[in-house]
Image (tube, rainbow, N blue to C red; front, side, top):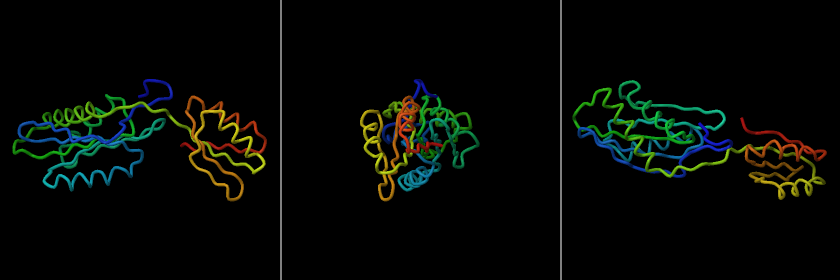
Length: 205
């Protein structure tokens, strides 16, 4: 899926609707950036409210970088006639952390399974072609635990290296959660481990 080491592709913001018409049925296609499965349900519910007369709200998503998860949903359309074609476009564009939803307004003419596959695939493709696609760095998170006397050494290394602090707790001892590009992760981890008394634990699954 990755076209460059340490990078992945996703959409930078929500986009849509892009409308595809086929024999009077209208297919409203949307793309959304997501990072967790729990992001999906409220988006789909909002689309059902927005398109109250919709006969189907079909979708597919993929999340994760090193370990990927995906789901498809035909929402009452014939099996594999909607979700799988939508997901096929996610794979074709080599994306992750993305949800594509296609809302169908039935136009009175049945399209058949082949027609549905083509319509949902085309709608998803058009939506992705209209979405801003970006490359992002794969990140690795580490938790650093140490006592206060070592704080100055730790902070010096953070300033000297491509490291971002994403969380910190100084209430007892010092606990920092840092984020680093996967390509720099091994080197950075070893730098912090070289400080006596600093515990370094990888947090990514």
